[in-house]
Image (cartoon, rainbow, N blue to C red; front, side):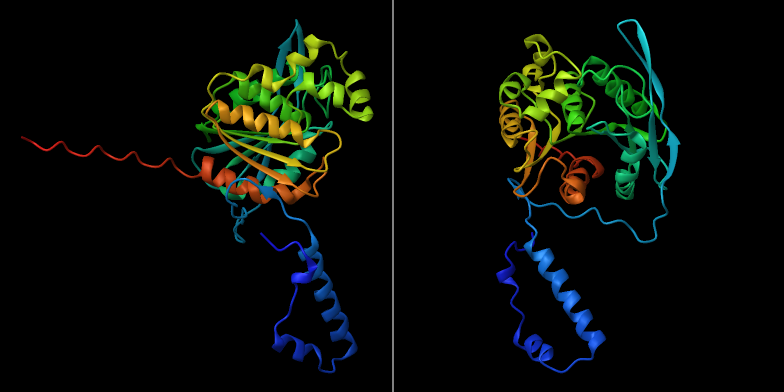
Length: 322
């Protein structure tokens, strides 16, 4: 992880001597720009994590850009039918590859989502994005991650698993904001995901509602009446199974004013108590929108828990014959 204090930028003696020589105006400008860029990198806060750091998801320079295909389907809820819009990015490697389903939050559109996440195909996987009901080009009610949103995520996962170019034993779900709530509720009821990534979500709505900032409360009120029943229905911690076998990565900004980091910490504790493999990354200067800074931990987590083939089971030692 890079140092976080500018005072640690101490050039060696040779560098100081080189900087002391007369340099032409253009070279001075270039040198100043390089120094400013270095200082900017060193002053940006890194993430606080509770497990080892992961390598960046480096893409091959020779890898061709992925191609995109529509990923649309229909769901039924309470007698109504809704069209769900989505896209899937396909990498070049043939055969059955792992697949990542992304549930974007904050009214996220599948088309923007796929542009933001297509680079993960360089890891050797398929990447699919859907717009949840009521967002983007998906029809249906926007009920603050109600049952239709979870049904859409479940159907998307089912369709991915059925594809001839996807390995159904290596599926992952990544949810952001409201999408993290949907991904968490899917994890509670569906054992197919091998990896679940939860980013900037709220996971105990009964506890979150009284403490939520005014803006978050107004956003929820516009979509659903926050009765105890409705809040419990949308609480990941209320529906956690007794045991969980999947690998879970939780990402959260410590300066998130919309979804407090305490929500992520509470969920991490509950998951650990249920036997899940949990890793957490908390960004000290991160707000609700973490942007591309999540790429490194997500890429490493996917490499280790989804992309890599399972370790061979050691054969039992032969029993000495008497």
